[in-house]
Image (cartoon, rainbow, N blue to C red; front, side, top):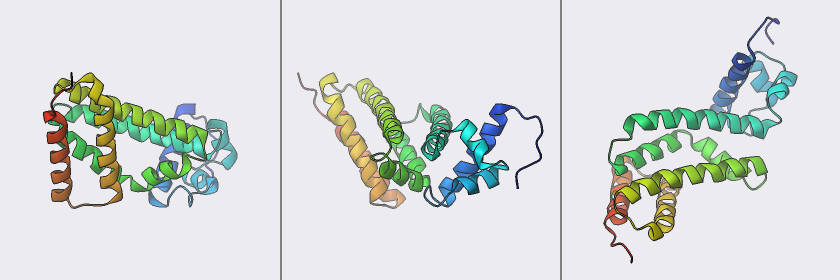
Length: 185
């Protein structure tokens, strides 16, 4: 049942909705988590959710933005580690959110907003990988193909699960190949 009305900061209420949605999206899945369940878990009415979010996809994107912000903050603490370690960290983070990764890939073709978020996520990931490869001496002309290869390997590891040693072997070989390729002139 929704809480008694009390003065509450708008951002505090929005955060409570996000926390509830995140928990349900991760544990029950996007499709199974109804707006009614989210409202109940947040202690608000369904109508209240719509004061903050246009629709369920808008709420999903807010949850994804929240998770991405948390991950980027964590990433800064490992930014000095070797590229292979950071890529394995990224795979582990994405595996932890496997259901949401699948939801994004399922919703993107049907939802322009989720598609735009997904595209932006890939652009950010490509930028991070490209910066590392550039710093390792990769030719600028090779970066788009090299980052695409990195994305394909990471998505492959998410789709075809491996144990930790198997993931490490794949990532180490990827990093070795990408960072030791001769530069094209």
